Image 1 (tube, rainbow, N blue to C red):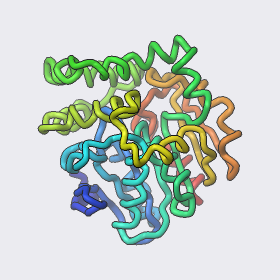
Image 2 (image 1 turned 60 degrees about the vertical axis):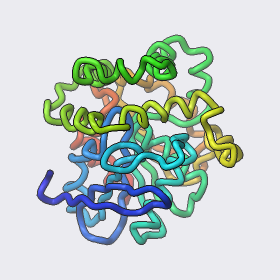
Image 3 (image 1 turned 90 degrees about the vertical axis):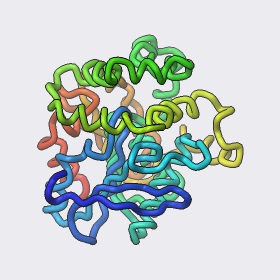
Length: 293
């Protein structure tokens, strides 16, 4: 653990959420990870933003050890957005700047749609928002090919495949998604260690199963869930994407402006892949810092 980073548990509804944090209470910068990853994905951001006066907090998302599994088995994006808003409240704040990567970006968009007054500024990394994304899953062969794993995760063989040969699946995804990144072995091992804990693989796959199978979603959240995919995001937003992202094509950012009435800025980082905030940390940190002023 980095010497400036502390770990403890907060209660968000029925969920016991483990967080990593750096800095002193002040302006909250809430950072949410995606798949296959954990809260340490923001290790390059902790000290940088704490030195600028932020209280930097990165939760382990629901189901990602040591955060507890979802007590009701729910992992749909509406619940992830509610978790984010619950974290802000549990930490004693009324508002936060939010950085979300991958699933964390989806949660961040959702929180800003549900309660825009709680999200001052939003930074979405590696996942666009809007109709182009949904259309890509119907008609864009290139994106469908990139997203093969989402459909594979619906199968009963997925858990065994992800675990096979010491989670080689995760390592291969990282290499496919960030083909130019020579990642530190300890970074990959940290993520594998997370996935070795009981229930984490099942929870991580449930994110995708809840997304593509409406029967797995909570009917009580149907109205909220419907609003999240195409609703405007009424907070200033910075979208960051790697030019070589092997998970989601950067061209899917095109046309997003129509859904961001408070303003949208974009940064395409040349030579970076899906884990752009780790691959080009200095550049990304400087751009986020500038945006959050």
